[in-house]
Length: 324
Image 1: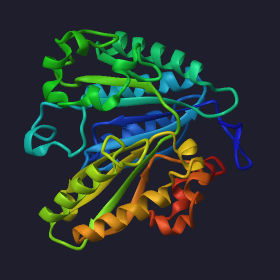
Image 2: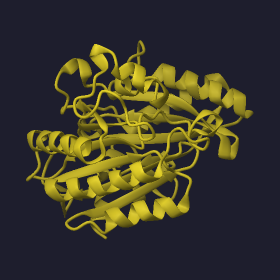
Image 3: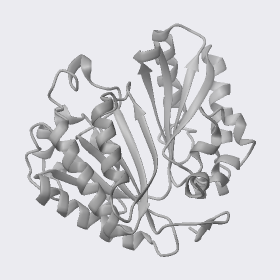
């Protein structure tokens, strides 16, 4: 990636830490404070979701500072999140897949001083540190994976925390760092390297909740890259939203900058989703970007206002956050 998005200079690296807590305001305030107060780190965005029971922290800096901030966040997550508790398991669990208290930690190269090679070094060192600090099982994914066969995050998360002990006992499921037996209450963590990704959720409207969830899952199946005629580089799932008796289409567009340049834009994906939704008798409502994306990705293919991003598209722009 270039050294600036528009006129805004870029820090070398970004981490987008996903934590399996999205409901307890007191705990979330402590998580936010520890990242925001970490030397050499700038916290750009925080996203909480009670239905997913998940929070996402986007912060930038150099490798050493990012690693120390993430280790501090992980210590708090492991100390405060018990995935075996009634609030986190069974009927109390969130709708989003998860394997750990500190669940997923991607390292993203951003500025001219950052590189994929450098991000891999950071991610692998962080994996060793999390295993040593907290006795966590750590799975490397993306460009940090030890082999292509272990690079896909969905495969690592398949079955979730509840299946983790059994999966890690298999030869192809062993963690890259830390114990073969997962932490009893905090599970495991996936640490990886990836380009900038658009994590994008669209709410569905127009029919009762059970039918909305069916429609969300059908849309996801039609759009995901692994389906015939699916959108290249797109992961998609359908989730229920119990808090509003609704459902959402949840998507990840990998390498959003390259995809947008190739014509696979957020606007083209929304347009296709709208066509498919009409056939299913539902409509697309407002959307949200989890984390941040370049303004160019929001503008590629159309007016960013047409994406109907909650609280305005500017809040999803990396440039807007860095310029503050």
